[in-house]
Image (cartoon, rainbow over all chains, first blue to last red; front, top):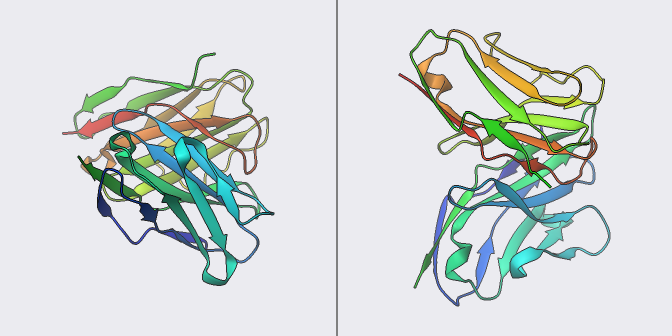
Amino acid sequence: AQSVTQPDIHITVSEGASLELRCNYSYGATPYLFWYVQSPGQGLQLLLKYFSGDTLVQGIKGFEAEFKRSQSSFNLRKPSVHWSDAAEYFCAVVTTSGTYKYIFGTGTRLKVLA
Amino acid sequence: GAGVSQSPSNKVTEKGKDVELRCDPISGHTALYWYRQSLGQGLEFLIYFQGNSAPDKSGLPSDRFSAERTGGSVSTLTIQRTQQEDSAVYLCASSLAGGPVEQYFGPGTRLTVT
């Protein structure tokens, strides 16, 4: 069965430090991969997506993610975190067998220290 | 333009009562999804509507849950005989078409069953 694993429930980083949020997926075919962010009191917002092609994708707010097929990973990175990045981050894979269905990870809550 | 709206934003109900949650998708979006977000559980897919096709109900956790989408627009998620384990945030999302495209999420309805 398809699944998405975000192994880190909570991550704390200092403002200005680099960030990497991990995401591993299990899916037989070429995956469609997404990262969404949920800021406090706000709905989920798309950060970036991967369909095919260049394995390093750029998103909004200075985020990027790298697709590594050999590791079944799609980790999210940011070189310098801002206090406003404190939020919950969700990785998702879209299955294409039958209907299109999003499978989300359990999320990683990011705390940013001033 | 207006985003996805959901009502009510908060709902407190007694165990055993029925509740209806409403979602107004973005105008012109043919696909509509319902998710449940429980603490520490990530987003759980419930149901997916795409155009005039039969909905994918494979995520509904029990027959107490049902949803409809009238006129290809507004959707209502109904939970009958609510249980305490139904307490969660219910999120609605819409997209321009079915498939691996960006979903636009509403702010959610927080349901508390006492």
